[in-house]
Structures are given as structure tokens and as C-alpha cells.
Length: 89
Image 1 (tube, one colour):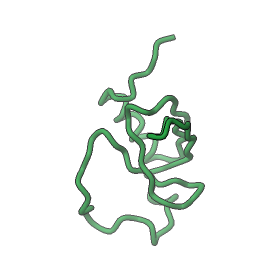
Image 2 (tube, one colour; image 1 turned 135 degrees about the vertical axis):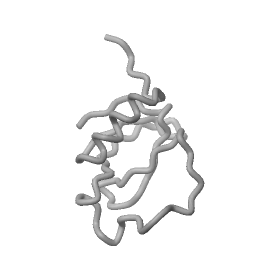
Image 3 (cartoon, one colour; image 1 turned 60 degrees about the vertical axis):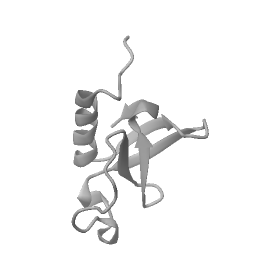
């Protein structure tokens, strides 16, 4: 079985579509070296209304990092594409 390249744009687009359609579990290595398993989404119907972004973000866009809504802590978090080790939906 071949390794999945999560830095590949096509792979990221597939994952983005999964995130927009529902809940996805992303496993990645944090900057401190520990592993993190995060149940997350970009589906606005799963995000509390007070946490849904209003309009365009003022934050600088970084293609290497994906902000997502963490469904377990009800907060926005992000991961680096190059740190992802597994994605399940």
C-alpha cells in the first residue's frame, strides 16, 4: 500500500470536500511531536451559529495550514498538511 501525500493539492481538495460534507477525523503530529486525533468539520450546519465565520477573514491565508472546527472542543483549530498521518470520515 502506498503512502498518501497529504501535501498534494488533489488530496487536499478531496479532504476539503469531506470536511464540507460532514465530520472527519484527522490524525496529525503536533509541533511538539505529540500525536493528535481531531474530529473536525467545515460543514456550517455542524458548527454552532456563534462560531460560524462572518464574512471574509482578516487573517493571512496560508495554503500549508488548514483551519477546521474541532467538534469535540467546539473551537477553531488548525493543522499543517505536512503533519497529517491519517484521515477518516
